[in-house]
Length: 111
Image (cartoon, rainbow, N blue to C red; front, side, top):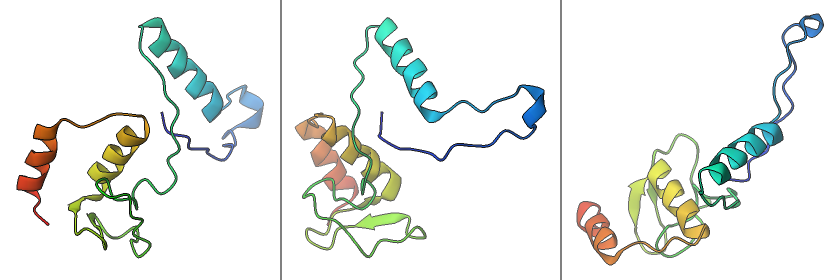
């Protein structure tokens, strides 16, 4: 689960008893559900995950929110920005991609 912190949301009607759950409460419930099912929860920092190259780790500082394709300025790796960010988060959590998957990514998205 990525370490993203949201601002506290204000309830729409203060006198109704309705409150918006905080992110920490949501995270605690999700962690409890995963642990209950025997799953491992690893908090990883999400900072610069969409700007970091999955292959070489270079940070693309010129990437804006309008850019939907990630292009590494160092190694030339090109991939959808969201897919690259998810692979970076998996890598930060300790996941090692199979060689076949890396080769398939290379075939689908050559440098």
